[in-house]
Length: 385
Figure 1 (cartoon, rainbow, N blue to C red):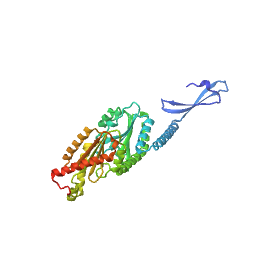
Figure 2: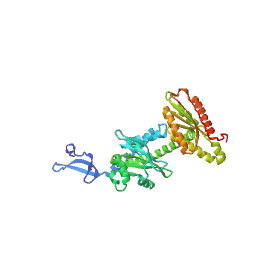
Figure 3: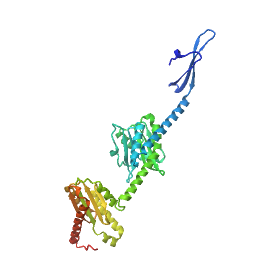
Figure 4: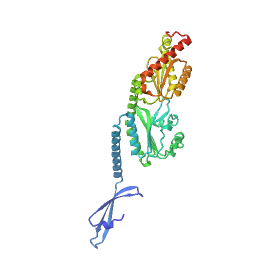
């Protein structure tokens, strides 16, 4: 840069310059000096290498920015009502802050496979969550080995793992991923999940990995609070033996039924439970109850299922058509045969739920008792035993 026209004797002009040949940042000071013997003026330039200071200043500024971003992300997330909402807010915040296309969390399911449980995607990016359920363990096996060593995953070009991790390579290539950062989430030294960002700009991969590692502690806290709330809800609303809803859950389900929609009620009584408990013990009785519940789940799994007494089960089917209800009743009886269990069944259907549940329960219970009486008459079994 020529600045001769701005120079004068006794005055310095300072400017900074990056020299790509020597790969250094320089602070330059230019001035003019005058030869008193002949009056000629000469241009003088002093150069000071400031590369180290500039790098230090850049690092400081970068981490100051990171601290601000983390604090802002936590501030927004903590304003949400539930841990799940906090997780979703954090993923969106990280995705936008890191200029990623997608952020996500994967958790191990009961089968030892990986489920994509949360995701955020940028505008114009396809969602992948539904396609990434029950992932076989061999896909992420290499990643988990890295996590066990306290390492995280980062690459700026997918081709880097073509040879070393071919299964994951194919999985990521299908999703149009070319760079990513993935960080494990630990609880008590164990990997409980991992999360990451897809396709952040390659120059910011180190910055992204630092951000994810720091924010990971907050996400672990959210996941643990979510699990605790789920456990408390299960204890409050679910029968502990069968995992069906209890009476509190039934009341909640009833309050959400649309009075203008149809309703089907299926009232079931497990036949012979007392006899099994008395003759074979309560463990055998529990197994009988579980087989009965399994039959009900197979026939009415997507509806409201409840255990309302020791041997009484209930299915509430909001919005079901009469023909579909009767078809499910037939399926229930087939499932009972397969599970070697018998239940007396009484069903009732109404085009609209305007009559309220009490009347429907009374009518379906009457039909259940009629079915029960017919069973004992048909088999000749003493119902008192």
